[in-house]
Image 1 (cartoon, rainbow, N blue to C red):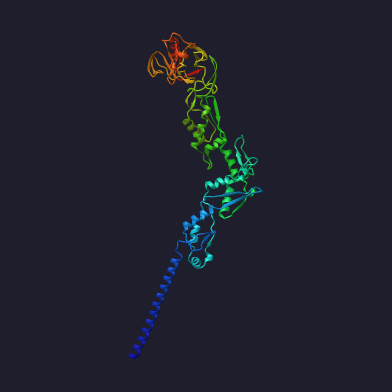
Image 2 (image 1 turned 90 degrees about the vertical axis):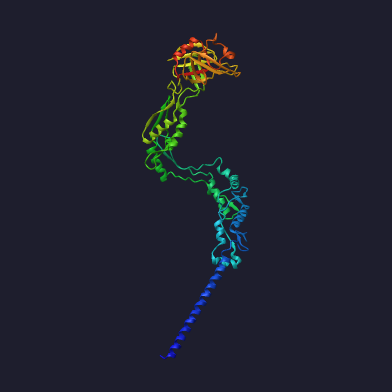
Length: 481
């Protein structure tokens, strides 16, 4: 090849390369322009946070509003609506002023930002600017609930003459447990009806037709269900345990239904619900506790009817709870002796006094000390001054202690203090007790009405000495009128 030809060839090659390079530059510039245009359109079309002119949601104008404003406007407008409840041939009833909140925020956002292609069509076509969203209520307002509850069909659907729907259950009351069938009643399922009305509101309906049969309550548990079958098996296996608590002349056998509340053996192992046991013991403690109860007794002074006082049996609930928990964990039949933190002298519920006691008759101004059914001390006394409001309290009390000698201190009605030395002191309640009163020349009769004590039982010294020799702490003291 000649030098001239080589030069020409190089020129042709350079020409071709230069043309290709120019084309590439043009393509790049073109793509850049297209991208810029698309980006600009995307910014102007997609990134707007406001609805276009003539935009409507559920027929409500939202033009120029952002999503939050649109939610607010729809909520306000929808709550101004009303719904008419129709049933049978009765006068329609209206629910209005819903004051509900609606779960529509996400739906509004989708209307505002539907995607690029859809947004382009919205930009240039008005017919695509109408939206529909479901106005699903978010909860129930007090106003709506009040209007709903005031509907006459609510009262009629739950009133007299209606057969109440009932689930099947295992009856635990008899010696043998049995399955009681479910009942298909005609009472109203309020929750279902309320949900249906709210659904109608969500869909924008202005009328709701109530069809009674659609809203009757339906049994949740059927007698032929696996749930009932397992329940019966469980009851027969775990709820026939015989657990008895006895003491103070009282016996209590736990009922199967009570056992059911205190144990859980659903996984095959008995677990005791300790809080339930504690609650149960608290509920039955009164059956074993006699303090303060009304007592009808036949004493030396005759038949008496007396209430109040601090004497008697008091169940130790803490220890009794622990004893029952241990018994239930065993899963075996048990007889538990009642645990008391305070005991009476007798063992019977009807008479926890026994046959050894001190009796005080206010009306007869007399004291008797009875030991093993026989009167050991019988003496006239002077009790609290009734005229000055210091009457001796009535009730059944426990003798607190005895001490000899002692100095009694207190306050007179005029506020002055007193100190009195006695040889024998036997208190039974709040500063009131038996003691010798050597300063008195007479006992019994009506002295107590205006010249009685500060509340104590004044005794002749010799009789006070005899009483002191025989009594001991805890002994019952019955003070009656």
